[in-house]
Image (cartoon, rainbow, N blue to C red; front, side, top):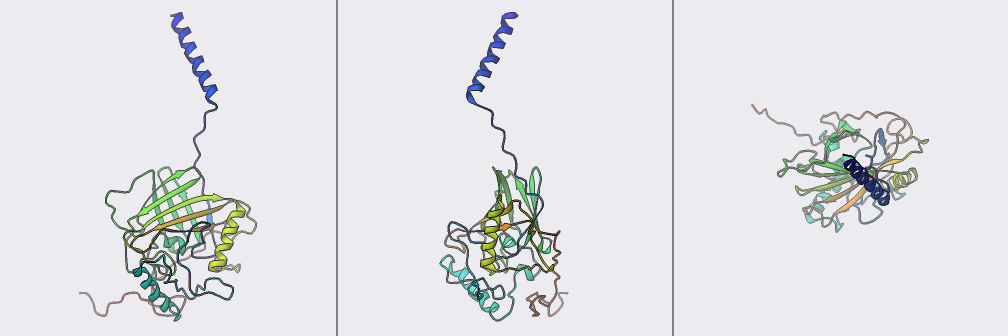
Length: 302
């Protein structure tokens, strides 16, 4: 009995010696915390630091920023397949007449990804054990991301698609497929269309305050400022010195694009709570004073 005890002690001592030589045990990486509200004061995508972004607006203001009153995507961009270029050319011609062409934001429709990131100013991530829920300011849109899961073998197309995600160190990676194609399917505020082959990868991570400000400033320089500091929209906290939340988006769609492209959206902390934004469906376009393309029935169905 005493020999067996001595042998056990020896084995434990040998294991301890091996662990000491192997170095300290590494702790499992912690999940990044993205809690709280995040906001920005522009629309569209910021240009990536590396690689090519999506299409640009052909219409510019005197300061070089995109003219958000005339959304005319550059249909000559070699990024576009002919079908996508034709759609952009048609929608741009409408916008340049001072008419807001129909898109999810003015038709009270769900915003599919990645359009939902292009045309939105505030976001909140609710992190749970098995899923992440993404809330957005405009029209109470929300998405569910299943964590550590796989796409079904046969995905049923839906407005937001099928989203699965996982944490990779300090980054939340979301993979989305199966986004429903409709007459108003688009990936950006210029109306660039997508096909049933659309594949969107989103990477959320925290960046330091200086980096967040630099990207946000580049976004404003490119796309203009939507909300001022007059209390009628999103206002950033000028005293915030904490990190920002950056979303990097990669879009793949061989049906509409000749290559994958990417863009970023960078959020910082707002001054106040959610700015209420509700889409009221009606027959009058609510910011240009023109009729919308909401379907109407000229005679009853029954």
